[in-house]
Length: 259
Image (cartoon, rainbow, N blue to C red; front, side, top):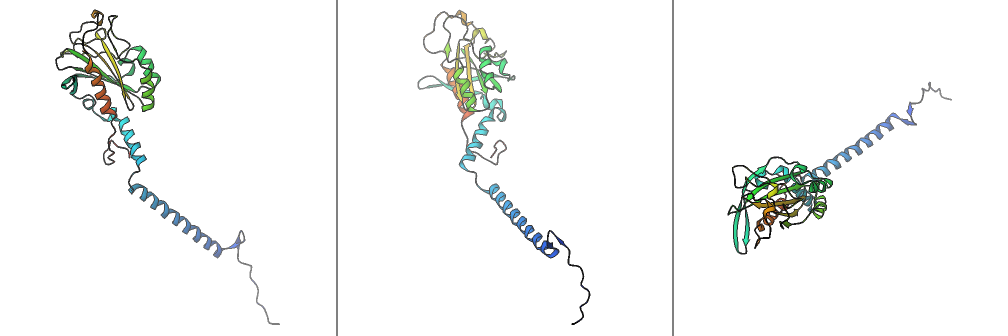
């Protein structure tokens, strides 16, 4: 029988596997991680470089509308002049007298309205005052800001509708009048409020209140005057609401868009 040399100890193992076998497993796992990383990076690159879907464009458009009260300048929200039609086929311009710097919800409206808009999450009330082309009628326009169109719609349905003076005193509850010294709107105060309107567009409810530039108190009006002296108020409110809520085509290269 041939002589056999001494037999060494068996190679060490971990969990029954030898070092070379663990090396193979490590290589396989590493390859799997590499493949996963490549797939993830490819997916991310594809997502970042693809065109947005219709749903994403719609979402971006909605967000842009909801941010306009902050993103737009006060002069853009309340243009210097707004066109209105006192009679069919005839167009005139209302001129802005001033913009109220305070945007507090409770300070802008009567208490009854403040309760309603506060319950639905009023974020701010923006106000400006306009005078008609003949400088006889003055109108304060107020934009009530909500978080979304659903909150605005709920508040809109609970707010008092349009009303004109009926000889019983100033129209209320309503938006507070905003007078501007040194302008044709200098005498417009709450006792002079003779008309109110309500409109809505997107996450905004637009209120107006109107009177006469001579500041005569509504209590002095004993009967309704012929025609519609405050017809411009609803048109002004609608113009502001329409401009604020009209959805624009998203432009993801501009900072105001979140695509």
